[in-house]
Image 1 (spheres, rainbow, N blue to C red):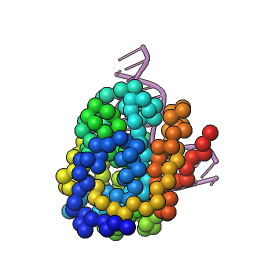
Image 2 (cartoon, rainbow, N blue to C red):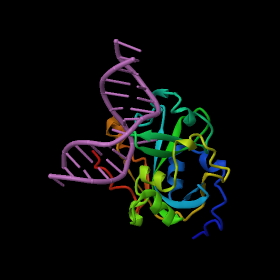
Image 3 (cartoon, rainbow, N blue to C red):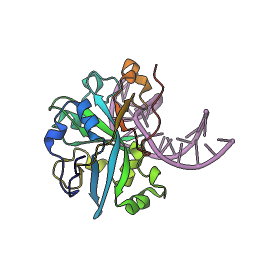
Image 4 (tube, chains in turn brown, cyan, green):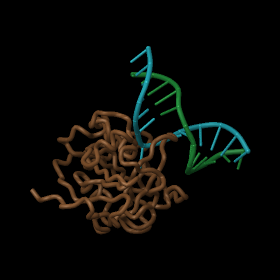
Length: 207
DNA sequence: TGAATGATTTACT
DNA sequence: GTAAATCATTCAA
């Protein structure tokens, strides 16, 4: 068992992100997602992530090569943030991966509270640790991530970044909430920590 | 210019 | 189990 980074301050390098998107999604499990917002340091251990691989992946916003103001960040260099608002209510945090021009991203779907837990409780308005970050919208609220971080460079170790954590046992399943994607919905592109009580929900039925 | 909708969360029956 | 909340983005006209 390797020792996690001594300090949350040390951001994972660009080489972590500049790899095939499925590889990055798997590698995210166990890493720490850190934010420094409003002078408050908060961090969570990533326990669930999904890969989206446009332009061929029908579930991806970049499906068919769609390139608009919203999806632009996905076409840029790896290691930046892709943010979008869903249902007019909830922000979703993604990592841009791969080479420039490849519109690939990893959606972070759940975290275990790690640092600044009381601050997360205040931001979320709930007490139970299990409900602080067990969903893509919830973790953004807990870590104070919103659209102002669109395109943010995650390798600088300021504002929002990833730092090394402890991997745990990684399992995989189909992705959540993309039933419209036909055959692509059957791909097991969701990775999660099999031992964590903080994943968002049970794997959808396959078939 | 207008209408439809979504990589969700929450409250309610 | 079902439904409402709520709005930027997208696409059609």
